[in-house]
Image 1 (cartoon, helix red, strand yellow):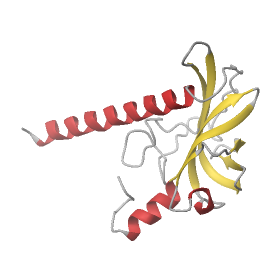
Image 2 (cartoon, rainbow, N blue to C red; image 1 turned 120 degrees about the horizontal axis):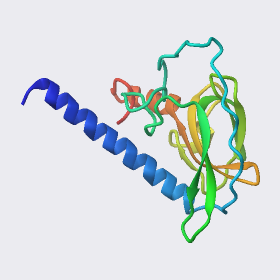
Image 3 (cartoon, helix red, strand yellow; image 1 turned 45 degrees about the vertical axis):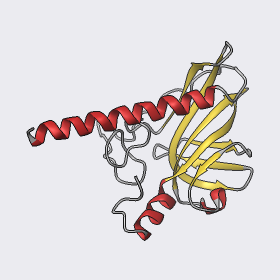
Image 4 (cartoon, rainbow, N blue to C red; image 1 turned 90 degrees about the vertical axis):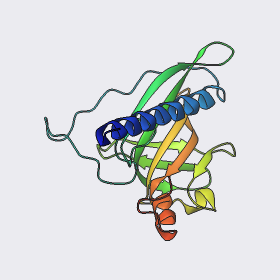
Length: 178
């Protein structure tokens, strides 16, 4: 088998895992909240028209080595999904820098300036280090997935790329654990 065929097979496998992970996360989120669709946020344009930013940090990019759940470089957005048992609900996702964090909430600001505060509950899954949300600090880069009900976003998961990468490097991984 040629090297290029192996690369394509590897990329296909990575893409399949990313899509499966995304679908599982959406399915989990859809089974844990009330259905209340809300209008989507209006799209924002880049600071410099025609300029595309390149991935440059934890969790920035799509299926590549630092991609998060196949989001293809998306910074933030909302989408409506069917809910188990009928009805629909709104799911929000955002990647950016933590500007405030406590045991009750986390505020994230994306590179385009969009900022949102998410409520944290005992059911919020925090992928950071041993101490969960206590390890997430202001300035860290995170990806948040949330369920939006009546305009209020409740985080279903918080993935801290900064803490994950630091922990992985401590154990000899080049770019954090895989």
